[in-house]
Image 1 (spheres, each protein chain N blue to C red):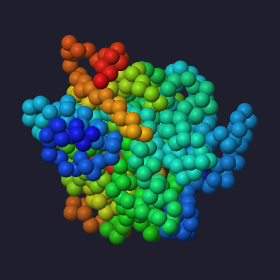
Image 2 (spheres, each protein chain N blue to C red):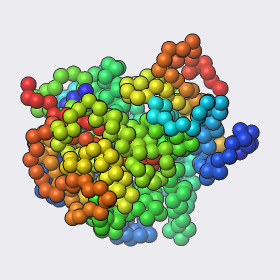
Image 3 (spheres, one colour):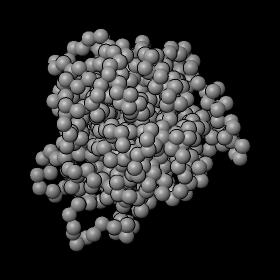
Image 4 (spheres, rainbow over the protein chains, first blue to last red):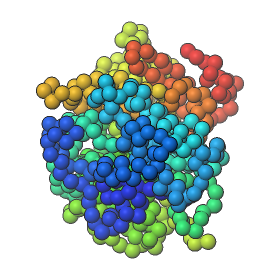
Length: 383
Length: 169
């Protein structure tokens, strides 16, 4: 079990955890329509984007000792996010006992568009990670996790293991992915994008929206402070062994990952499941099967994709933070844009913000490469 | 790599659809498991954990070429699917029916300290008894694969930073 000491989210819904969480509670979505020509794309799309002007303004005061142009917007957001998370945590980021773990699928892939302007090394994911740790004068080699859309969960599991094995005292887990022509065109080519705001688990769902976000969680194996009472208790990664780009019909990997974290707990104590819920036809149907097979059909399920879109390598860091805020306040958040389901076996989708007094929540994730992850979070009773 | 594939005498047409990274990973894992009894029995106790320096940059650059201009705009889903480094771990899992953990990490260099630490950490998963661990790099015509099957049990050939450093094949 590892404990949270500080968090931050930078997204279309705000630049702090609190700003983001309050917007979600009010049912606000950051997903908007973007015209042809945005990112140089020949097609219009719906997405949730970070306000770049505000990002640059907020970063400006931090760059007195370096040139602003040394950093891409993704790197600025990551640095800003760590700074803000550490306002609460107040740990020594430069310590040998602090490890940085960066979760990203594509990092600065946007730089491939203009190779003449950008030196090649800027697109290496380890380079982005090194730039961030150097900024904070941390000399440990950062760990970079790139495990498709479950990267953020894999990074948290990596943090849990490093801290359990006492290699470090603190782990700074950063999820960071920005959108670009590269990523959006790819999802368009898969016909995976919805032309309207996505509808996770709804029978009318017809695809996902992409989102950009950066989020940070600082974990420790030391005792809890008074403010944060949610711990990461367990986590598992399992493969479908079925297909590289479409989920297993039987929810094989997802079901197995769920089973791993359910071993030692009472299912009656689960407040909610925060599913991946991308709103593609196959992902949501697969998760419904996995949830039902794991005997969790009565547990309230929500997806946060209607608020933030699918934020790729950031998704499970961001969604874990929002879900932690909810559990801390004894709240189950509603899943946006859901009316009715058409799954063979019904699951319990959360349609309004509700009270709960249960102590666990489960985070589910799935991604390309047939990979699935499950995280188990637990509320620790007041000391 | 095609010659190597033919020499293995396996029939797996999907091989020809794979990108360089997946082909390398596939070939190395075939070599490791070729004589394993009941090798296609489904199992959950083998994790596939890979590392490299360049992520999927080789195929990323190919994909970028196909979308660079809107006059010659051909985003291909079959190319895009491989623009994630962990696809190779999925290909190995599909081939061998491994339902266990699959993960991919990026580091600047072949970092034996980090690989050793990460693989040992994987055994904290209660089901994982073996880790198929690899360094796989396929970029700028440079191919490099080092693959190890590591067991939780104690053996004569002990897994350490030194052994993975020496076993440079």
